[in-house]
Image (cartoon, rainbow, N blue to C red; front, side, top):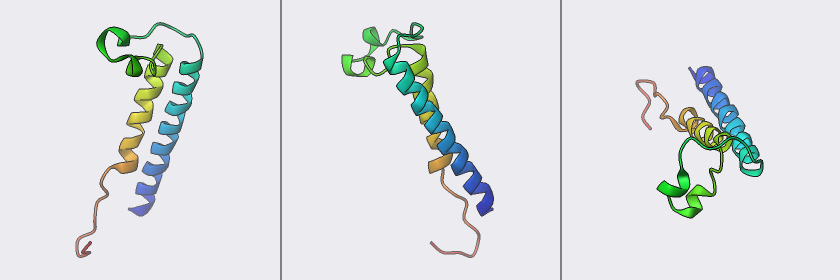
Length: 81
């Protein structure tokens, strides 16, 4: 059980790190137009973080990668914590 949870956490960190790297790349490089018109729908400070599709996908991966890291772990019966 512990090995499986450790693998899930490692996979989560890999996905989150790849998403952060992709967001960083998309933030600094002029890429494809974004899927959502962030400047029309959000405040300027949010829209500036997502200038193109690469940064949008990177932000989504970074957020999705947090799920296996912080998902509540199953506890064994009989243990009190």
